[in-house]
Length: 188
Image (cartoon, rainbow, N blue to C red; front, side, top):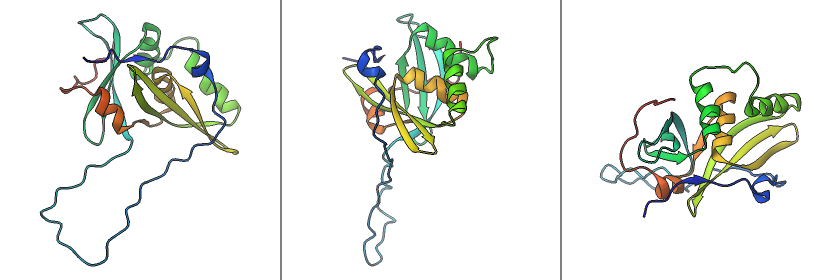
């Protein structure tokens, strides 16, 4: 059965701010001694989080529920996650280059980050468990890096405005990826 792909509800646990710093690392493979012929060997599949392009937001014609469509830049896999109507507006406005007359919540957060000398570095969609997507927002300041738990739609709305990368862990594509290619930029 296909998961409904909903986001985490706003609970006290989701609002908790992690204190521990998170360091992202690269997996290093030790080189083997001596030369070997790799011309016949298939190229290994890259693993780890990959940057995605936000193709857009649209209302799913089957369910009449707003959804966001992401596409991996490395392997072109697609991911669709449902969002609420307010998040649809928060994501679609900056995608279309529209600036609202008054700041929306995500604009306010970025202004606050700037005043506190905190920079949004990237957002990562980290997991899909029990039909709920999880994300982290990575912030940097003079004190180091801080990672916050966030709803994916909020994290992406911030990333679009700040023009920072959105990454998706491979396991999320494996669990919730679309079987067929998504349409290009269907903004509403």
